[in-house]
Length: 73
Picture (cartoon, rainbow, N blue to C red):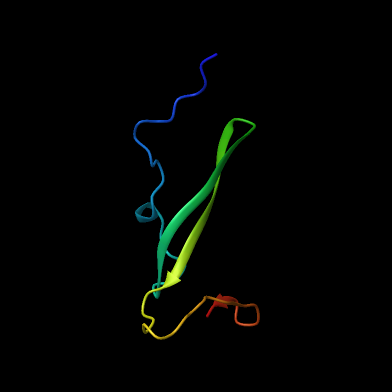
């Protein structure tokens, strides 16, 4: 039995194809895409990893969602 072949143009999805959620972040990875057919539509679900752009070398930063403000800080 012959299995499915990997698409020769991989990777199909790259970080440059996605906009960051905030101008101060950059998209650093695109992972775990999944596709499902819903009626006559095809839906793609993908996890996008972001990181703050300007972080001093001696610090660690992580985006946090502020529910009260309704935005990532």
